[in-house]
Image 1 (cartoon, rainbow, N blue to C red):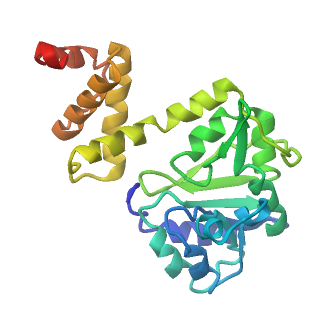
Image 2: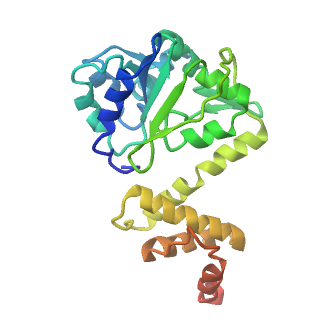
Length: 272
């Protein structure tokens, strides 16, 4: 699993949010199907779903199996909570409060599933809640308004298994026809995934410590920050991250460069 298990009251929060909806607003869950292929089939036994990839050209059965999808939570259908229990530990659950009907919201979000940069098109992984805050932050105000539309609240379950909130724009924008990211935005989004990629590389080297995923992420994130300050090359950076992770070296509240350089000095010249 990639994030911490969901907090014990995560479903209570949805029930409370639905009870407090302003008139004319609805609550929808956005679920990233990439982590549990065909999970939408289980959810649709409880309530109808809208697959975002079905809005795209030439949607195949394979694409459907991993498509992000929407399901109404107004009110939460009986049995939905039990089905969603399988999502715990996966970065795949968001809640959107909006006046738009589900078909319109699906069309709006589907337009952002594929974006363009430098003539190349790629999957924009905003339903992955590890990526969502970083991707949203990299967008312009107009792009955020196009993605969120008239939504007044967008929550997601973060790395620590608790609900978090996006800061949504006040002004909604029209649907995006063909979203385009500039080079700065693309670089920011690539950078946002580098800690998770480092964790995967460290996992390839051997078992990770028996810690919560959020704790592992924090340790590696801090180690990479310090490695950047020390200008370590990529291989040394990964070794340093592994050292910090397996030795519980916590650097969040310190500069950390002295510790990193001292560690670096212990390496044999041939390994440096």
